[in-house]
Image (tube, rainbow over the protein chains, first blue to last red):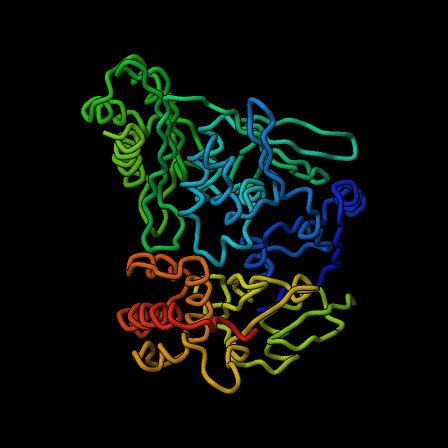
Length: 285
Length: 162
């Protein structure tokens, strides 16, 4: 399969990339790592007139400490993110979940920013960024814009990015001590997409749960926070029974669809089971 | 048409390429490197895996123009002074293949796996090769071959064509 024809632009700075997008209009598509876009191009499900390749915009690959948060550049590859000491120290959930994305060859090319902008409901990283209250930074000719993760993922393959906006990266607040994290995914085969995934973090103090974050992958057209689960655990002692009871709320407020991998009801069941598992593992009990 | 300069298996090529040309088609159709097959064409099977600057990539999911200035190694570039690479030898001696279609990708991915982890456990080998599918169900012998190559390569200085 051969992609349709397109013009190819290869900016080397953020400024050039933003200008290229502004000049190319709605017929342009940004090429990050290409591991989702290339299959779409080959199948001609995407037929952009212009492809803006960010491969040579080195500044977009930076991961840096910004004091109370860590900034991960949009073009940081999955491979880079998994190994990065700042990510491992301050956002270990991202490193752990990213290591479950696809396979090593795909992780060498695929990028965090690309998978967030692609906004695939079965993608693992949107739920992770949502659980961590990440803030996405976009840039257009009109200047920068900050978009909280809760507002970024709008619908199936649809983010809040405007056509002429470039995703620069995501800021992840440092959460401090006492936290345990886990990403639990259920999929048919090693490299398959998640049928359901659960990203969670639990902070305990003196045995009781002080704060909890739970976000779900593929339980609707966009990742969703399981707020009822989070609320049910506040102040509770972290036991398997407490997690199981709270996880019974996991499917509330979700809107999964049925497909050949499972019905909506099956996904709701998985959300409850996997949430209990994820919380238990995160809390280390 | 963009002009690219790319090193493939130790030889530098300069070519004008259409932006939509996939790396795997450039390798096969322009350079005649048909040792790299097209398998699924959907970024799943890993048959077309090559090394780009030493790291495994699926060449059906990279544009030729993105290989500009990079160093590509295919299955055809693994021989050292006419001798098979230890990974090729191990796949041969351990019978790590049946029909052979997945083998070039398996071998390239396995070389990358050992670069990252020279002494992997069986589980780490299986995880490291999760992006490469064998439809003959030959995984047992493939894992055995990688383990054997890891042992062989840890006793040898030779790791790549260069």
